[in-house]
Image (cartoon, rainbow, N blue to C red):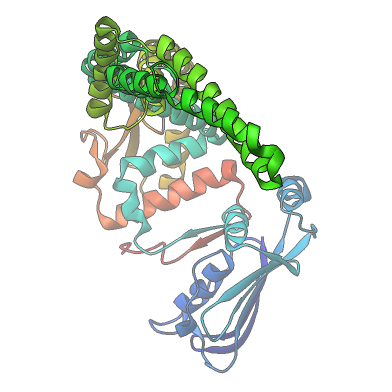
Length: 466
């Protein structure tokens, strides 16, 4: 329970200390007396966003502290999970600086605002002005029923399964749409792959083919050049070798007369040896090189096939073609695996759907079992509020077409009858503002027993009550 509230430099309040007793505490005052300021300060302790405009003195920071008497059994796990020292009298503090930035503390331990907000929701339930209007919303009506039935754990478990259900549903839909798009693309990719597979280009093949083609198409000119070289060097009368050998003989006979002639003799002899070697090599090359029109045509056709694929896929080498082929093959494998992915995802989806149906059914049964007791509890409190002639009826029905939402498979409607014998109608069609306020008070009284909130705050709970 809330035991003490300390407010410094907030709105119109320079400094205020308030002690609260057990059970009922009432703060009254005329309009503008500052009741809402107290609630605003407490809201900051509960994790509401802060604003520097809320500072009374812009040169000082705002500090708000609230002391709560806590039950160790209920709160120890939260404090341990958030690495906060538990105290039976715990202090929540919020500091707001001049620039609007704020810090939050629990028992002098700095905490995130989200942590403060989570703890605050466990400590205090604030019934704000006009909150009774939320009674008209089916989502609130279902939340009240779940709170009374203590479905929190069951509902969270269901929501986790529902999120997985929706994830698999989205994935399955995407895979099936992708499969439709991929069927046409598969045929196109398969055609491209078969083209590449048929040609089957090899690494560096283009370069080797181009060299071979160049050699074969120029073989006649090459052989003619080699023949001429061979003829001039050695294979005709008056060839270069024949003349050089004659000169070598003449120079050799005269080398004994001058040392320099011996050097010329050696150089001529080396030239003859080199030319003789060239002559033999030209003969070998000439025999190796041949003109073969059939081979030229085969090489040309092979190059044309490679060039055509390179142009089609906008690449320049056989290595690029090989990479393109591998990429297409990978995409084909992905498309082929879609069927397996769809099957696996579909199986997982059906399994989760069965699990979801079971958990939704458990929720429905829990809600249905709580309806009668909640109706009686609310009627009891309405009687205390001088509305004993009225009654509230809770209808729980399954969603259409067996669908599910984040709260299960149920839709709820709260029907109200102001007097015995009058037909039950939806709250928004029949209940007045004052009746809604008293019904809300009856609901708060009914659910307080099962929610076990230490502190309930009612801000003008009597709105509309004459």
